[in-house]
Length: 436
Image (cartoon, one colour):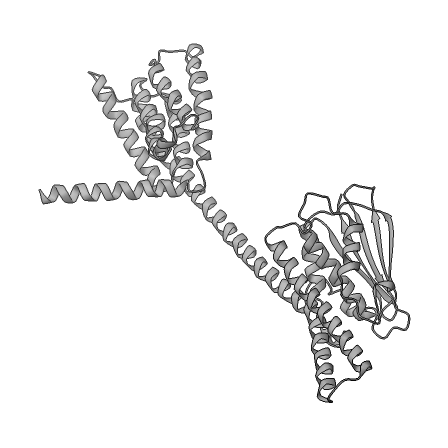
């Protein structure tokens, strides 16, 4: 009794492991069974009539084809009740056994072999290999062939074993082994490609995170440094005792500047949070135009006192619709403005020009061009911009090009591009190009 229990336990565990492997093989979906169902609906009826144009007697397997046709239709999962869908995979396993190895073996024996039986056997073998992992390929074939032979012995009083079919068995076996090896190689190659793709995706996410952090540092560094400087100046003024009217006015102006820089920094973080959660800045379905984005920049950007919005010359030739997130595009335009203002420091006549050039009014596609007459970018640094961090010594330690890297990332995501043209000592032009 103990032996029977052990055998039953082993058989139950073996069957469970094989079925789990079968389910794992189709963990990405049951689309292959859908195609098998479509093939069954077409092949079983149409090939049935081939027998009428083929010479020689053949076994009339209409009932097998009818059952296989029905099983093929059920493999399409059309009209399955919700409560029965959990039984789809066990059904598919059984249907696979009946439709391929069982039916093909039974009909081959009834027809006494022949070249058609060998061809059918190889076709069925290849389909089983495609639809199962290698362990279940062996199980499905052995179970199906065994049941087909038993059914033949049960209905045939004087069984006759077709010699040519048996002799060609090794050929079918070798072909099956070859197909299994090819499938294993394809799976291994595909697995390596998927692993490589997943690794590249992880590296891309890490790079995007690094770029976002770099962008935040790039954008927040200046206002926070100014807040710190203003706070120090106010502390020094307060340490001198009571303030006169002039000092009180200066302190008021400093507080206003601190508030403005703090507001900008807070808005920057809020915009990043909104873009992360895909919430529209304007709260509605309105299309974002290039001119409205530039106007938002002029109204909200914390320009320094010596270079206010009045130094910005906006030229709108043809307005156009922008793709993507308003928050991210605002941050891109903001970082370009920040870079230009940094380059304009110490310039006696600073000039910042923003051009809007669309392909056609109200349509997608166009350019936003930001030009300044600042210090420019050295040639050896220019080629590295938008590709990664660059040495910051060329602009007195103010940032390392991460703002342009962030801009390039955002533009890439929207099918656009960033180009930088500059002449040291004369100025820089950054162009945001948006596809139609």
